[in-house]
Length: 235
Length: 249
Image (tube, rainbow over all chains, first blue to last red; front, top):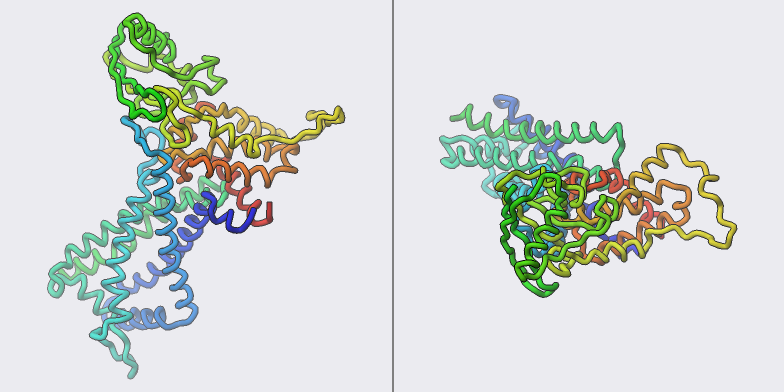
């Protein structure tokens, strides 16, 4: 089979979905570990977070990883849209009565909707933090040992502080909503990626499924706990 | 029992189609669903109407002809049964039953509840076979040792009757369960090895060409499959296709 043949194949699109999805799961872990520093109180936490933010935006290997992440998100989205459109075309006439819940889980049937919510979350999230860190000239700064750091820590604190941002409650609420969508997306997506790659085994697959479900609950919950904590402690 | 039946009527592939509602009384729980359809058609004919077209053949769950999407499920509410094996005792007096054809662009409606499933035949023609030397020198299949577990698994895959419930059920109208069963039944056996890579490549290619949707691993197909074909087959096909694509063929 020619190399262009495999790229056109429905299975190749599924491999791409699976690989980019799993790579983004790794990204989530890395991003979460960084975010958890927001729980460190006082100047110590501020310094740790800002030094981490500087490292993440300047260290060459991290830069490569970040471009891979952008590419994965884009590819995952475009591939997902193409697959969804093809799937719609495969059934132009809908059933009058369809009992989807009789034979499949809710999240597995709503991956496109959940993915779209996650995408909207990512766009607003990047606008609020990533954009400011990279391009905002009015970014506050913190001086540590004579070095001036971009103070992303303060940007985050202020964003979820109702005394400074009148929309802080809504921001925290929408953040949590985004994490619910992510959780349901991962509930199906994590183990589904292994199935798409042909990784299935009588003994190990139940463990992959359990790991996926644990991942789908714990990672979004940990992410969501941060804005909730920041909002509630500053409210 | 008395039933209200909402049946899809469509006079050919180009017709828009609509639901007809029929009242049917004196249905007994021991009737199969198809026998109930026979009684309904008998009534329609006596009233001077055109009987409902539906596929059926063996009426014992092995031919794969009977289809019908009944109350939102392929082959109705039962598990591990075809429509001919579904009995009216699964329904209650006064129930409304909605009966639709398999809906997929790869399975165009011929008439009423009958759809054209020849897309499956073309997938088989593309590679779902084993080329055997018929010169009289053919090796006796029983002379080739096959591990029991592989033989069982190949047999399980081979029980697929090609009814199309997987396609009908899948929210994407994907044919992955059918194709993977037909790939697996040979991939697991020694006789299937020489053509293994070419087979999976060609069958997947044909599946895509027919316009079936993509698998999103919801698992609905395996739940509704009357023969209990499971998702292991889909994973095996994903693996084999990847291997064939990477290593050539």
